[in-house]
Image 1 (cartoon, rainbow, N blue to C red):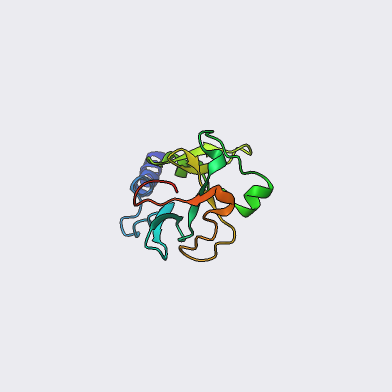
Image 2: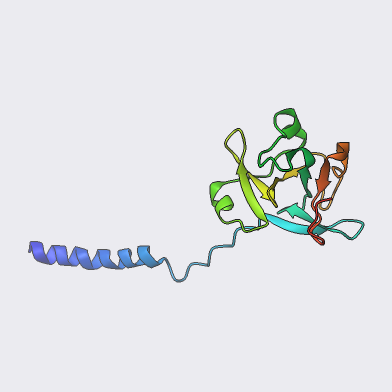
Amino acid sequence: MKRSILALVGFQILPLMVMADYGDPTAPAPKPTPSLVTTVTNAEGEKLIADSTGRTLYVFDVDQGSNTSKCNEACAEVWPPYLLDAKEAAALEAPLGSIERANKKLQLTYDGRPVYIYAFDRGQADEKGDGIGGVWHYIEIESKEKR
């Protein structure tokens, strides 16, 4: 009797194991994760790198050549770093990359330069931060040059 009960239980568990291994074939495919960056066109017709919601991304001249972010504390309140999780960082392809900030969080880079959002940009393709202090610049991708 024990054998027949075990066999019966085994036949009932086997389909569950198969479903667990292969998933439900009638379930919808998972939605792709949104891209970390996109492009937007500003009023001058320039194509700029933007976050997934269309907010313009910037680089900071003081960071150039340092492989670290020099914008921290009060600076980072006005210029929040574009942060990533480890899975997002691992999936990046050049010219995108990442660095580890002093607080151990990962920040997006473009051509090795840390990338930021300007807190006072409110809409898609806003570029109010471009040129501030002569050291903040949006990333124009048409010529792949940072202004």
